[in-house]
Length: 560
Image (cartoon, rainbow, N blue to C red; front, side, top):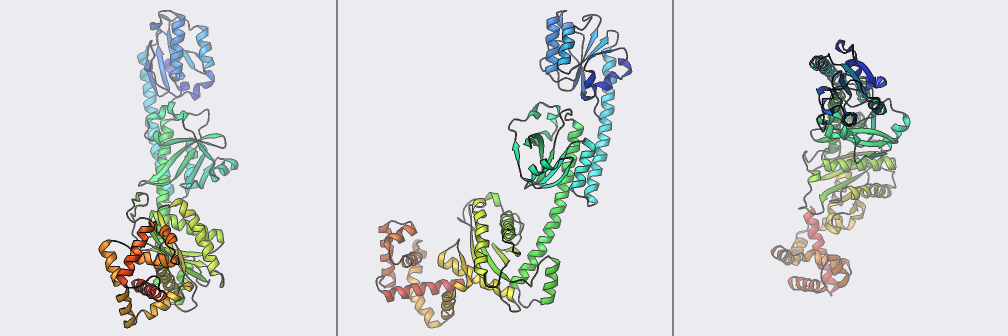
């Protein structure tokens, strides 16, 4: 499509002109503009330009003429036409040799051919080619969009791009997983699949003529399989979807036509990813609603739920344990713009939830287990396939795998877990969710956030919850710890947790001070305050038991 030096030579007005060098490269020298120039060249000549000159500025000096030709060559011009017969009678042999050494085109034009006529014909040709290119570009754009609308895939889009620009093509998603390729050998594809790409810090592309194209700033150069590849980001609404990769042949140059086709291909790829995302989002919402119905609703009709599960790719006949996780920042006031919640809190599509969901899927794949997972109001609900008697081991392996990765990816996020075994009753999924939720809340109260608690290990807490409903016990609890609660609220202290830490460390002051990050004297002052407010002695075993029991019952009432 682009005008070449060979097209210029074939013009009727150039019939009497003589080609002095570059015969073998005429079809490889693109002509984008034409100009007339004399010395000095400086920066007045741009790449892919056909330069006309009379040589008048050289004053008959062969050395000045040679320097002039060197400057034109270095400017990136495609061809140089000399008007011979007045200021330059014969082009010196050493200038022709210089042109041959640089694969440069020099044309000897008789003096009687006017530059204005040459420029008119060349500009007409350029305009014709530009108009033809615009028409072809529009046709290709329509073809690419139709491919997407007709449910064709990325492979067909890559094939259409290769057909029109003739370059090797690879399309990857944002994780660099290869989704399509055209005219790329298996070895190179394997390098892409293994993410073996090395960025080139200073690209050679900066000297090319397409620098003014709006796509140019987005092109990055990489080395893949010891070959140069160019990468362009595929994005939709500021969301990164994937990458378009192409390789430029050594004998082929970038052109505006090629850049426009690449730009239209990016649009087609972006539309494809948007369409794929829409299908994926619909499926995710259906799965979310189904799992929430399993977990939170009683009396679900078994046959109806089984058929619905089958349509969504789930198997309810397997044995599942329920895992409920609480998601929160380590500091509630921490700024966390990276995972801005721009989706509903119940959605699996939040940026933060995406990473957690991804690690849940990876862990399940690694352990060879099936999962059902969703998110609801800051918590993640997971049903994990397990063997009947190994649910503790399976849960720990699963959560270890997830946390290992999440601790690297999401350093500001803290996850607490509650785990419950499978129930064989009619509403088994709802029952195991309720137990896992209870275990989670008890664990957060007893040992704090960032831990995991199994429902089977909460028997003492559940026993205390049962007796905590007695009115006499409620009065004893209130009389015992109300002074501590009031003091904590008024002075913004934490005497309740101070006592629990002190008791957990078996009354060892030094260990407790280290655990609470307190000076020893500060801890002793708090302990004296606790004794003063409760009228109980921390060296009396009965008093310590009463205070611990009261606090634990109070905490359990808070959970209820």
